[in-house]
Length: 135
Image (cartoon, rainbow, N blue to C red; front, side, top):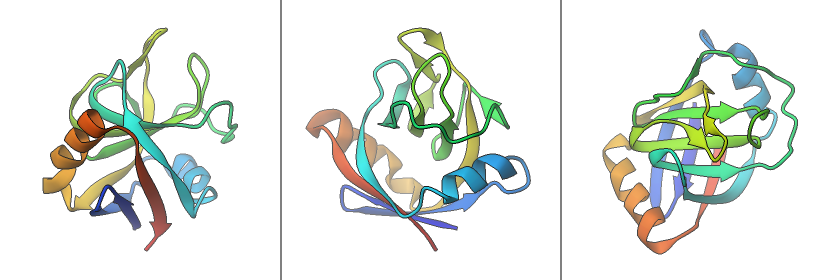
């Protein structure tokens, strides 16, 4: 499980070991992770954490372009930079280069009813601190 806090909200997420074991392992190596979350520019109701040219050492795994709210994606880079996508509503994952598919590695299982509020906070008030910890 992951404990995620941002903008005064707290979430618990189940890691998807069965469907994305390499992505889960790569993400857990990044913990503890403290960053900023911002509104995604091309992906609809989603926020994201840009990670630049960070090489997480994985390829596509359990990849999707249409995550549901609370289905966290890790995009390992390629067409666009490495990033973590944090959907809070209707999402089609994309970049300025076009549609992308990210690895669905974790799913919000507690606090999901507050995702829309976090998304609106990020959208209307800008970047928020975010932290990920193993629970």
